[in-house]
Structure formats: structure tokens, C-alpha cells
View 1: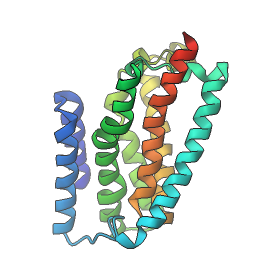
View 2: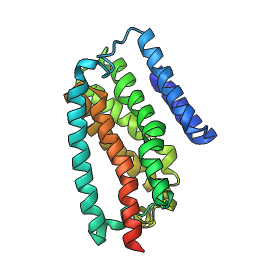
View 3: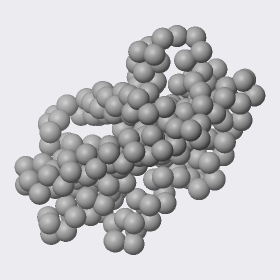
View 4: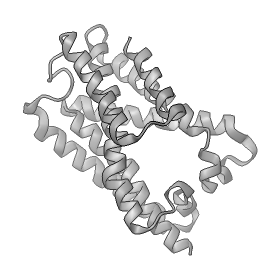
Length: 221
């Protein structure tokens, strides 16, 4: 049921494209209400107050690792093109709005509640931990099929790496990469017991990508 609902949310989000500022919080809230009505507790959902500090520490550590990797990537000319995404060729004010408001609310909130909170907790009632991690990671990868359809056109660095592979290869690579990211986020959630850890890494991956992309565009002239 959770997977079916997530599939519906994904289609609505990318085909009908409702405004992010209300759709993402509404969808995340509806998922949490459903989870609570089915008997899932806050701790099971990775939202227990006793794990907030642990989640914050793990999330901060993961964010620093991502920031260091991005810094190296932007400074090295050979990898800089990966940051030249036309979707984020923005003025400073636009980049800050995207990194600090749109991505946290429109992307991180919904996806963390969906995958590392509700789906994770629902699966954990019926199967072992490694299966929960694998299932949520694969589902997270598949979630990115629709947005990956336009990635090659938006990011010339991706197109250059994949050569003549075309859209199918872009989709496969995106699903694999985001599934791997989902596995890392899931492990952070498992170790910390809190969604804050995975949310911190998720925010850093997306939002710092925009901010370092801003730097890459400036360096590229």
C-alpha cells in the first residue's frame, strides 16, 4: 500500500507538477497520519525525540563529508563539468532560495518521510533490517526515473560521461546512483535511529550541489 501511494505521489509530482510549497508537506503529512493510524510509533518512524541528538550528529558528519567531496570536485577541472547543471545556473539569491527553502521543503522533507520513515517503519514490522535497507534503497532509486528523463539535457557533464548512451543509459545510471545514495542514507538512519541523520546527508547532497554548482559556473565563466 505504501509503495502504491508513493508511486501515485511520484506521478502527480512530476506529471501534474503541483506547487512544491504545499504538495510536498501535504503528502508527507498524509503519510505520517496513515503511519500513526496503523500503529507505528514515533521511534519506529525514526522521529523519536530520544534520538534527535544522535541523528543530528550523524547528519552533520555526513554533511561535512559531502561538502569536502564537492569542494574537491569543483576545484578539479576534470570533474567540474559535473556541477554545470543548467537547472541551477542561478543568481546567488536564486541558489540560496533553492538550497535553503525549496530543496529542504519540496524534496528532502517528502522523500525522507516517505522512504526512511514511513516505508522503512512499515517494512521493519515484517522483515529483517538488511531487507528493509535494500528495499527502501531500490524504491528510492526507482523514484528518480521520471526526473532523470531530462537530466542529460540539463547537465552537459552527464551527457559527456555517458557519450552516445542516450536517455535509457541516463535513467539506468540515475536509478543506480540514487539507489546507492538511498543505501547510504538508510544506513545513517539505521545507525542513528533517526531520520535526521539521513535528512542531513540528503540535504547536503542536493543543496550543497546547488551552491557548489554556483561556484562551478562562476569558475567556468
